[in-house]
Image 1 (cartoon, rainbow, N blue to C red):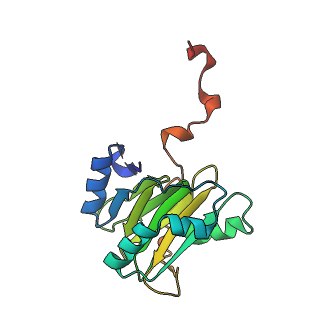
Image 2 (cartoon, rainbow, N blue to C red):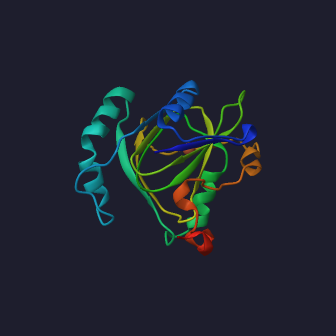
Length: 192
Ligand SMILES: [Fe+2]
């Protein structure tokens, strides 16, 4: 399930209903869509799109999305740093940003303008719809791995408009999910 943090208020939400409610107040739809049968880390993009076809069709019918693809980022992706820089600078789009996470994790920062910036850490099964025009940026977690279905209303796909506000430099791009506490930080003396 997604986790949400409001750094300015030193507040973290871990309850699914709390996260969903907070996001809804900010116009962002969130649901934990679970998993699709038969998928493995070796599944192809076509396998993923087939396995999730009912959900994709539902979203297309509801949101006017016409194209679905799978973005696949891993530590050995060519030009990874340049790619991540495009995501991690504050930007907005002319269309909704819809992501269904299939593998890996990631951290969205949302900048509502009149309210504090908040961070949303997503994991497999999480589905979010960030409305067009919302200022945001995105970082990978420490394992630099994410695979996600993307839906677009425009066939030309992902077009960012950068704000150049510098807001993204004020926040640490650190994931905070409990599974990302490295095992080495567990004090052996605490084990029983
Ligand atoms: Fe974006």
